[in-house]
Image 1 (cartoon, rainbow, N blue to C red):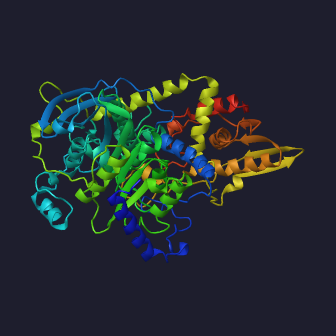
Image 2 (image 1 turned 90 degrees about the horizontal axis):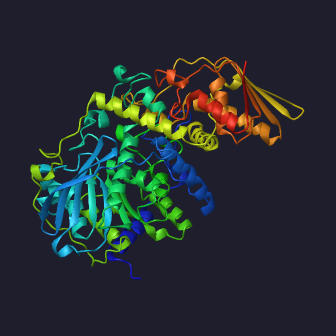
Image 3 (image 1 turned 120 degrees about the horizontal axis):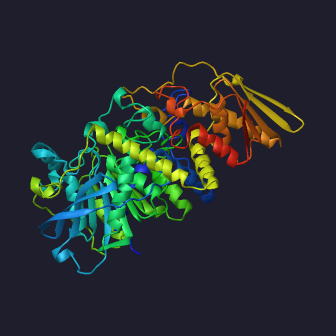
Length: 610
């Protein structure tokens, strides 16, 4: 098959780029300082395994990490969408309709639905579909008069009218190319106002009035222990938006693409990592081995511990995926060791190295501009089988009026939001999660909780030796290893990264908690004893009881024969600060201490309380 012209252009530029940087040695690549907490501005390389089997084993664990971090393990019940589509606007070659749907009861996802029309439409045809998370700036992001002049001058945009609204322009053109396209709002943007933009993207200080076991809000310690986050809620919104798009009568569910830029690029990575339905993706502006996303809405506890956006994007392999490198945090993507060469190598494990591209657009700053969109259109043309002649040229269109883009009107009322709604939403999410686990059989529940705690503890991650493991003593005799846990070292609070915003995800999204480090240290002792063939008995007291139970839950079934607890009164739900040394994200969602005890017993461990 003849290579499309734009692919030849990209290959040539890639070869040129690699010839410039080929002398870069692995030793020259930046490394994380030993002992320093990692943050969103760290280095996040993609280590490519030697075999496809090794990668797929790693990929399975990574997908579980993404689901757990999003609060979506196991996936929640898909409640009725109650979708409303109204207010059709007809333009040359496309139509626009207003949409709102419920990702969970009472919480709306809002946006605009673009369809082919006129000469671009074929009555009775099933069209491919594109899901388009917009990223920061909102779906109606306006470059303004001065901004569009600059973009016209540097070649980033082509039209003074439609180019001012690059996110709408992307969806209009996709509709004109024959794709049903949904451009939906991030939390706090445009018509999605039940949770404010300040909460979703500008959060900086903890809110004591939103902390408590009976009533709490996002970013609180209670929310973190239930893995409730703006990030996870947006990911669920994306999945439900895909449910809506897939279910439209004029959509071919086997030809679905996803593309977004910046924060929308982050969402594209997440959707395509965990949802099997998309067949092509273009996560622009966020596939990078450096900065991982600065907004609270792009971070969640547990998400990037031991991984990063490049490796998470690799979870889409071997399906076709495109992106660009610009003069921002993606600028080194073409450098060996920094992202794209490793993605290409990983795709090569499947024999599909041509299924991933990275356009060299280093002469532009952070963008999803006309030049970038053109690469995406031609990539989607090929892999959604649109059958269009290339090159694909974007056309101008009159901008939407305020009335044309507003989702709510006199006939379609805006839903209630605010503080009370936030508290109601987090409580509902917790209740649904509890009910979902309770409905499982004891064996299924124990398996689910154990698999979750393997992520919470980080069973395959390196041991973090803080020099305080003398609280663990091991005696081995006659095939029995007796592991005794004493009083834990005193620590005032958990260290956090140097970020002024008081959000656990900035620390715990990249680093294990003290609790997890201690549980993993104990787990290593258990594994060593089992390798000797010993039967393992744990004695835990003086506050070490939850660590013993967490390590046993994360271990292989039956790895621990018996656990003797000094007390079973501890509850993670009583922790009032994410700086507490016993804090660990997800601990309450997966049953708290009673859930750990039940899991241990169900998996063959005897648990006794002195």
